[in-house]
Each structure stands twice: as C-alpha cells, then as structure tokens.
Length: 312
Image 1 (cartoon, rainbow, N blue to C red):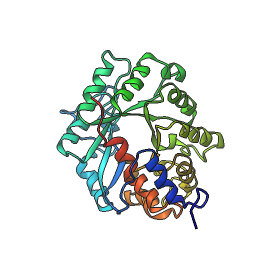
Image 2: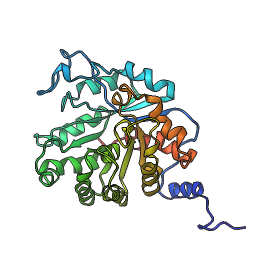
Image 3: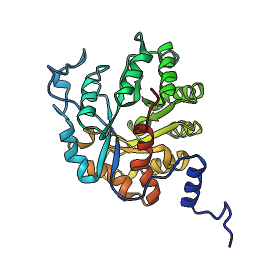
Image 4: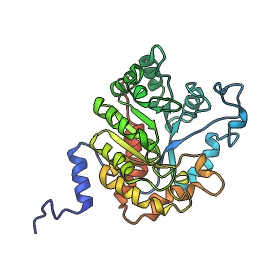
C-alpha cells in the first residue's frame, strides 16, 4: 500500500521534516551525550575574584571544577558540556573561558555581558571568537521588565547575537514569557534558548496559562527550550516522573529538534539528588520518547545550537 501523510509513522514524519528543513538527524547510537547547562567555579579567588556583592561563603559548594563535573557526567556517557557563566563572576568570563581553552572540544560557553556598556557588540564578537555561543539575560532586580526588554542595550544584544549566529539565553520566571515572546517577534533571526522551562513548576504546579505562554514560543522557529533543573521543579524529588507531562507537551509542540536536556550542575548533585537521575529521566524513564527523540534532546539539539560554527 502506498503511504500517505496520514499513514506515516511519527518517526518517518520527523525524519521527513528534518530533511525538508535542511537539518540532518543525529545518529541514534547511545552515549556521547551533551549536557547543555552546567556551572563551574574555582576556590582560587585570588586569580578569579568574585564580583562585587558576592563572598566566598556564597560559593556552595566551595568549588565545582571540570574535574568534579567529570566524575558525575562521564559515567553517564556525557562527554561535551555547555558552560553557563556563573553569577559569582558576573561579566568577568575569564574562568569559564580558561576552562574551555584547557579542554578543547569539550566545552561550549554562554557568557554574561553588560548590555549597558559601551562597545557591547565588540565585546560579544570577541567572546564568540573564544568559543562562546550564547549570552545569558536575566531580569534580576529590574523593576520594570518592559523597560528592561525594550532597552537600547538589549536591542543591540539581540541584533548582534543574530549577526553572529549565536543564541540569547533567558533565565526567566513564567511572568516574563510574554515579553520574551514579543522580543522573538521583534528579532525573528535571533536564536533563543529558554532555560529550565522558564522555571515552570518552581513555585508549585505550573499554571495552565503559564504552560500556554511557554508553548506559544514554538511559533518562533529559532526558539528552543531546555528540559533541565528537575531537582528544582515540580515535586522536586527523584525520579522526577511528575515532569513527564510537561516534557511531553514541550516535545510535541516544539519538536525534539528544539528541546535539549541539561542537568544544571552542580545544583543537580546537591544532597538528595544525583546526576544519574537527571539524565535517566530523558534517556530511560519516559516511554513516550522515541530513540530519535532522545538523540535530539540528549545530543543533537545542543550540538546544533552550541557547538556549531558562529559568524565572526
């Protein structure tokens, strides 16, 4: 019988869609996974001073170096990692960049920049030359979120990210989703990666309108979502199966090619949690995820977004 669109299997449909969009599917072999969100820091505060407002007592654990990370991730088949600049250092990205240089091919990076500073575009371009593939934005203590999103510096950041073919990575709460949606409308050529499901479920069960606002971002072709920080969302208890319905909705609406798993270490390995249970939720425990879904979410999407060539 001749197959029609209605009789295509879901896997065939995804393969066809990927071909039509010019995106080759990753191999389905298990292992060689990518963790799309990890923070590292060092106790050497002489060489790498903490930013104003931070003290050594704030560093919990006291250190989380690449060697400490490898002890958790390598036994699970994770060999590449996206480093997210730690807030202890703010815009001083030196430690992250030094880690990337020390371990060539292992790490990509997401930097923090001051969107109000002179020469922002040049700063971003210089960081991209050093392997940075994303820039974190965080509303922080901004009193007026609309003014923050609409500032001249934010406009420069989004436009420059598009020019350089790198991503803007919002760390936001659910109430900021409509503003990010607006920014995606203003800058459709900018790749966007939403951290930690926009923290849906951090303060209790996600509200239906919040979930709707997250899923609405899927209409922007260059927007992605990190399935991450399971220790902090929902029931906040391994094996995190209560996160399954949200993961399924995000997979269904965005497609696995725009979803990436991440641990959010070292916080994922705080007492009561461990690295295995984070990756195992996607790799082993959700029966609605096909092997192809897993290949995208555990490797392919992050490889495409954070390990591809930039334009500098």
